[in-house]
Every structure is written in C-alpha cells, then in structure tokens.
Length: 239
Image (tube, rainbow, N blue to C red; front, top):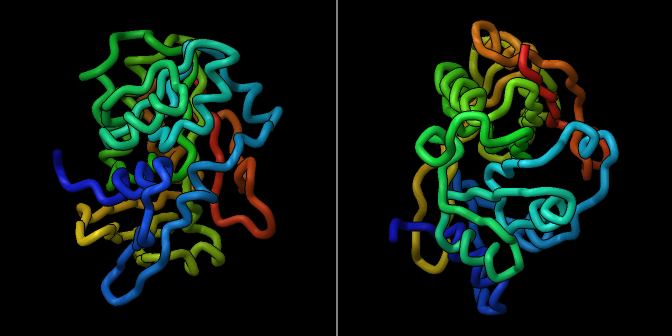
C-alpha cells in the first residue's frame, strides 16, 4: 500500500486508536488536521443543495462517508476515494457502495451515463492541478453522467481577499487563480505533496467552454459555513 498518512489517521480515529495528531505541513508552517470536525460530524440538511441531486449519485472524494450515509437513504449513491483506509472506514460505517477510485480517472471505473448527478464537497476538484486538468476532469465527468445530469463542485475562491489567509496559500499573477501546496504527516509517515490550483467561479465558467457543461448557479459559501466565506459552490448542468 502506498504511503497514506491521511487515510491511516482518519481510520485510526474511527477505530479509537489515534494517539497523535494528523499534521498538514507547508515548509516550516504546520496545522493540525481537524479529523473529527471535518469527517465525523453529522450531515447538515440543505434544501438548495439537495434540490440539485438525484440518483444514481456519485460522491467524489467521500472522506469517511458522512454525506453518502445520508444520501444512500434517498437513492443509489456510490462513494469513491483514493485511500484504501478510507474505503474500509466507509464500509465499516455502513456505506453500501464505497469504491477505491480516483475522481480524475472516472472513465477507468464507470461506464457512459452511469450517474444522474454527482458532487465533490471539500475543494477536491481543485486537485485537478491546472486548468487543462480541470477541463479533462469535466470531460470525464460528462462521459459518466446522463444528458440531463447535474453536478455540484466546491472550491476556494482566489478572487476573495479573505482566501489569502488559508493554509498553504500561494498567489498566482493570473487573475482568478492561486495555488495551495502542502503534505500530510502522521506517525512518522509523510504523504505525497498535494497541489491545488484554486480557480474562481469565472475561471470555472471559462473552463466549461467547449465541454458539455455550463455553470447554471453559483454562490459563495458552503452548506455548513459560518461567517465570511472563502469558498464557492457551483451547479453545473449539461449545456
């Protein structure tokens, strides 16, 4: 199994075996990863968010399965993660269909028109790493979804001044773009470096040009956010 301090730490927390914190590191700067808060709280109902989703549903980057556990009670829901530890944790928690799969290689795992809707909460879509990577992701997402599908993506908003305060932030001279770069450490294990390209809502709209998608709705915030937001939510529908 490849190095996976993040997945190991989340699983150890679930098993009650976490003896030291999961650390995010950007050079000399560190922060403690909030496992309980971010992955093991209860899903907070949001009528607007849920109104866009139908089954079969794909939960991309499902973490410990918090959201999947709610939506699978409504309709067929498949959760994917790149960590075997997280997939095992989701299965132990009662997720009906948790699979080891990368959201950036969807065609390798699912056939055409498999899903009616999909979402990625937690800014994972910005792990596409570049605008070219984002367009490739949107193409793959179009392939595995129906002609009338809806998708909700969540990302940090580099166009907002407050976003500059987030951990591991890097500026980009191009308007509407920025980066985050960091890795996780746990129990002597060091994870791979994570490169997020942060893109604004307008940059997302540009990325959909020439794809099957268009941005139908977008707003700042998150279903669980409080105070001034540094993220956006965008609804994509087939053009």
